[in-house]
Image (cartoon, rainbow, N blue to C red; front, side, top):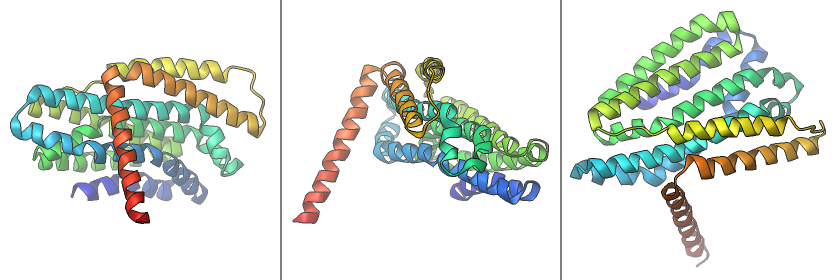
Length: 272
């Protein structure tokens, strides 16, 4: 049921755009959704790499260790989500212009959808924790309620505001379910969701990104690529040193190192 709810949630806004908007609007909005898939791919990688941490802590009742592990993963995922949101916020038009001039009108919906994706993945660890803690029914209620809310908001906002209305319906729905998960894991499992460092990094990287964007960049394709790379590197450095603690950085590097070892072993087995 949860998978069905998540699937419906992803298609509800497209369905209502098809009813209330034009055919070209569906194509533009679909392109925006495809662009932010990278945020979900990043979250899926974190979920697969860290899902094994929670069950032993839940079974043994080690609340302090559970709170620390949950907080660390929340910070890592939030840092990734916020960093990607800043990139989309600063370069939405450039990214969509790759598909053609007609897609540039989707810049505002793309930024709003990137915000929704950031909110969703930042609190998605709460959904994983609820399911592993045998609170699947609670997460099912979250999914059903969010689908209903998203459908209602799409019905109200899309006829008035078009594609930005569809994206706004999504971000409001994601905000509602994220708040619900934060409260639920706190009340049911006694763990806290840590976003203070991510909020500080968001403010710092956004200010830095706008400062870089304010420089006299030329409009050529090569300079756009340089601008994109400079913004990405600068914001990445902010998140690495501001959003994450020293322990978080060590854990992240350990995850990357273990992943590289697994890939090397797979290649060795394939060639032997």
